[in-house]
Length: 295
Image 1 (cartoon, rainbow, N blue to C red):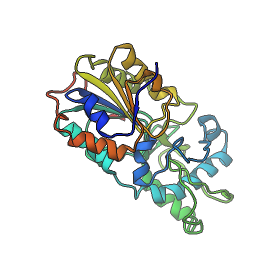
Image 2 (image 1 turned 90 degrees about the horizontal axis):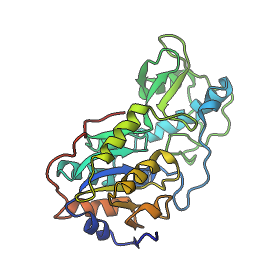
Image 3 (image 1 turned 60 degrees about the vertical axis):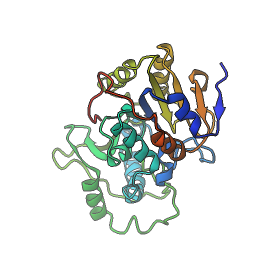
């Protein structure tokens, strides 16, 4: 199947008019907030740390937390962009009944979105691998700053930061890592690393959202994702199998193009903003199974 491709933001609004929506978002949605994506046009190759590497020993954790310490100092300043705001507006209007995000930046919630599944977790939380206690990333930032005074300031503001808050800091020797204050265990960002599985209950909730859509009046809207990994692609496949229309908004081709009814090759902020302003954007009533924010 050859997917129709348009560069006109109004094309998405026309196809989605009057339909109940579930959205699936990726890193491309947050680029207008100053957070670079993984695979967009012009993005350099990235090699995120895997779970096995993270738990392999102190050297790997020191590297991760040193780079994250610099990256978080910037990432925490990022705010919702017009794309996030438009999706929240669609929810308030009754057109958007659920949102699945592959992003870990928490910007959907910051924009006022209520029905969100943070598929890969949240970078603003930290979990102990021993006692499973969850604490805030901001609290850890203060502890790391105390343990490593001047570390962030000693690195150039030009160092690039990835979507998961990982900054391209090369020299991390001597960085001191903080352990759990409760049990002394290893602290890990409360996100799904490559090599980890997304919690089953989270996946089930996403399938329920997509499964509640119908071919007659529902649609899956993908925004800012290349759908390269199965984590997000499986929900596109589920929608297509059920005969539910799929619209993808992304700069460049995606792995889900052959499953879509339309791909709009344009910026997320521009397209979603036009969709939120469309007179037919509001649809009555929620889709069954949609709930509140879930991580």
